[in-house]
Length: 102
Image (tube, rainbow, N blue to C red; front, side):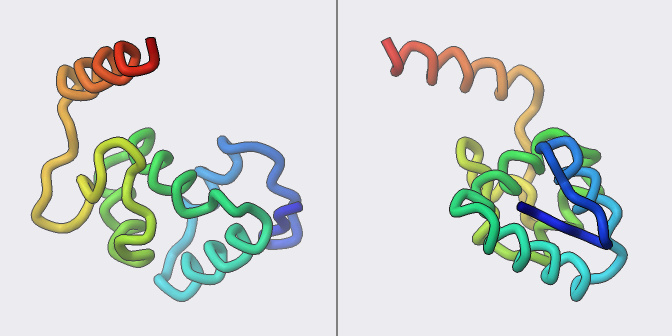
């Protein structure tokens, strides 16, 4: 169970919202500590989440949490100096991954 600011976080959408709403590195790191205690997949989940939020928020969260939260498919795309994938690149990577699963 994940409790943040006296509220139970029940799903990934609420987890994303909680990370986006953090205002300082310390607050973000504390949320991550709690998330890691609740889920063995916390780092990968946050890395994946970075692809679904505003780029500025993704870069801020990535800067605070470091390379442990690299995106599971695109790696450290949201690190300072890197370019996140375009929509076309993401689509093509999805097609490639789908073919690999066959």
